Length: 187
Image 1 (cartoon, rainbow, N blue to C red):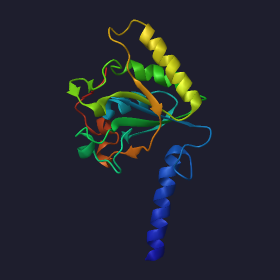
Image 2: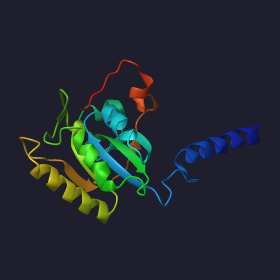
Image 3: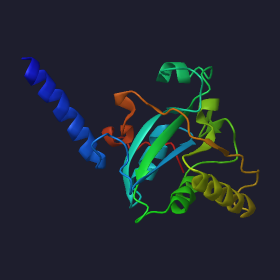
Image 4: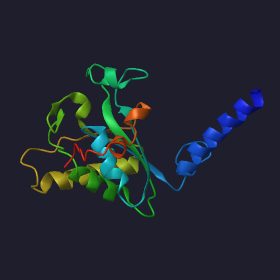
């Protein structure tokens, strides 16, 4: 029985790793990770997962101070976390700059606390960079978007180092794929 449990656990880990192509569950060296927050993570995930070159998306919480946040605690706005999407992408097919261009097209980067009717800090616009190169690209893209004249108000998207990313509860993952109402919470 012990071997069966161990074999099942190993199989589950291998199946999860194969989903993104790495035996340790992290992005393989030729892939990159981006972490983005822009309102409700359901709509952001749905928008980003459709981009060619995106390998995997996971919704979760980052940017806060509470250990092991849950949806309920994050929604209190007392944890400091943002609803975010972690994106594993293939830079040979999708550049980080192209990913950020899409990110700025699908949410309102001018409001610190809302997205489509919600007025919450966990809905803030933020880019959590994973390298110095990502920081430079994020600053450049934010400046270009800000100067584009598309928005009447200043673009105030936070650009901050990536922190611990806590995947959201299973029922939040790929949520808009699971429902058939046609609901979306992004532009």
